[in-house]
Image 1 (cartoon, rainbow, N blue to C red):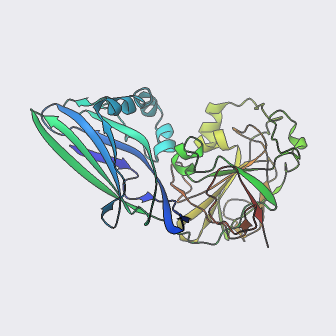
Image 2 (cartoon, rainbow, N blue to C red):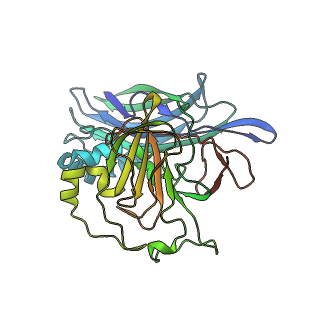
Image 3 (cartoon, rainbow, N blue to C red):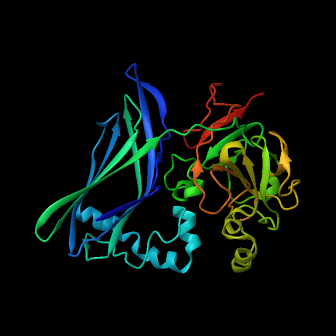
Amino acid sequence: MKVDTVPGDRLINAAKRTTLDGEPVVRSDTLLRAVRIRNTLDSKVSLRSITFRPRADGRVLQSISYDRHRIEERAQVLVPLVEVFEANPDNERGIFGTAGFWGSDYRGGADLQPGESTGLTLEHIVLVASEPMDALEMSIEYETCGEASEVVRSIPVTEYANRNRYILPVQGSWLVVNNWDDLHGHRDSISQEFAIDLIQPFEDGLFPLDRENGEYAFYGAEVLAVADGRVSVVKDFCEENPRAGVKTEIDARAIYREHGMKAITAGNYVIVEHEGGEFSFYAHLIRGSIPVSEGDVVQQGDRIGALGNSGNSDAPHLHFHLMDGAQLGARGLPCRFTNIVDTFGEPCGLIEQNFSTVRTIG
């Protein structure tokens, strides 16, 4: 039996340190994007259970177990997608960071003939303990030829430390939406795991999705380089969506051929490479507002565009995330900002909660 995972090397723990009943605790939050189980034996295999055991210093913090019925339910979710992934590997690469992970051997059940595979996706683990999770153990119990067996796999879980000091890419007070703690927002795509969208509500606190672009006071706001770096990619081709809730018609095939998969959703965007292999991504910019070119050196705070409503955007906003490469399928990274405070004026660094309001200082 062969067990593969995405990511395959380590999981990132977006840990938060706090107190509970006066005692210091750590809220661990990690996402195992995919688990693939392949029958490499010469006989049929029947899966009995899959158990996940988050650990800290060798101690089991929690046990999450799926029986045969639940395995089949979870595995069936992927069945209609495998054919799509085979037809267009970029779709798979955009979600999982790799192409060919899922293939025609996928059966999506709990019974596997020799050479067949099954699996789970988006195993999201959140727990509170005295120490941060540092490993995730998986135990797969199965039966073959009337005998019970088990295969165990362990993946390191680490907290990520930024290699640069970053500022928020806009100035002022902003509402953060589609934050990484919402599993079904950006986080289901590997590059966008820790992405954020930045908006400013109207004076009544609402954010209507039926206005002209210019009615949003922050439309056209300066977008700034979050740290020193070199411009890696610039795409400046996409007409603005005419208003919130209405998208400009596009020829997706032509855009894909000329600009790649990212441009279909991101519209006009800029990617900046920073020290230590970290890349910042700024999307939905206004066409013609980007003053930089590929290869330009920028300093932290330099203007790199204007906040717009291009690409797959429902209303003006800035999409931002950090990742470990400029290519499609690069891995998303947490970004801790050095110049923001929360609604109470406290420094907040990593934005930990969806619908947080943050304000820049300095």
